[in-house]
Image (tube, rainbow, N blue to C red; front, side, top):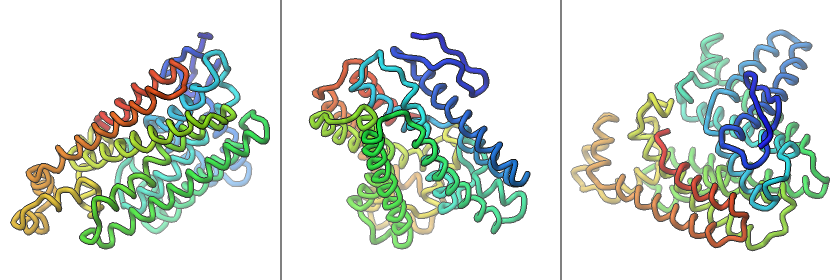
Length: 356
C-alpha cells in the first residue's frame, strides 16, 4: 500500500489496495474537505453571510457518520477493477454520495422535527438558535438543496469517459428518485399509521433506505467500473436489497431501544412522531386488545415496554438475520473479486448489527 497520511481532513496521498476502511474514509473525507473549501471561498466573495452558511453546511457534511454509502460504492467498484487500480479517479463520485446523504438527513430531520443528529443539533435547530424557528426551517431546506447541487458538481469531476459517467449518472438519478419516493411514503404513513401495514412499512424501507444505502451504491460502483457484468449486477441487487432492508430494520430497533449517547439521536423519536415502522406494525399485529388500549395512552417509555412484551423486537431480529443470510449467499456465489467478496460479507454484518 502506498504511504498515506491525513492532515486534518485533507488528503496528502491517496491509498491504494489493499486499503483499510479507515484509509478509505480518510480519502473520501479529504476529497470532500478540498471540494468544500473551494465552495466556501467562492461564496465568501459574494457575502460574508453566505460564507458562514456554507461553513455550517460543511460542518454538517463532515460531522462524522459511518460513510457507509461511499464504502459500498467503493467495494462495488473494486469488485470488478482489481486491487491495483488507483482510486483517485472515482473519489469525487464516492464523495458525491456523502453530499447526497447529507441532503437527505437534513430534510428528514426537519420533517421529523428531530433535535439532534450524530450527537449534535440538527440543521434547523442550529439556524433557529440564530433567528428563530421559521428561519431555522428555511435555512435547513436551503442546506439540503445546496448539498444536492454540490453533489452534482462533485460527481461531474469524476475522471471517467463520458459514456461511463452517463451510466453512473443514470443510476445516481434513479437512486435519488427512489430515496425521495421512499421519504414521501414515510411522511404519508405518519398521517394515518393505523391504516399502515408491515408490507407497506417494508416498502418504505426498501425505497427510503435499502435502495440508496446499499443497492444503488453498489450498482453505482459497478457503473464506475464500466459495468457490463449482468451476473454481478443481479448479485449486487439481491445483496443490496436484503442488506439494505436489514439496515433499516436495525434502525427501527435503535429508534426505540438505542442508547442516545451512542446513536446521537433521542430515544423514542419514532414513537413520538408515530412513524409506522416495521417494528411498530408487527407490535400492533401481535398485541392483545389490552396492550393496544394501553399503548395508545402510554408515554414513550411504557410504549417501548409494551412493544417488547409483544415479541415484535425478536421477530425483527429474525428478519434481520434472514436478510443478512440472503445477502451473504448472493455475494458468496457472485463473480466478484475475492477481496471485495470478503469485504461485502463483513459489511453485511457490520451494517446491520451495530449500536448506532
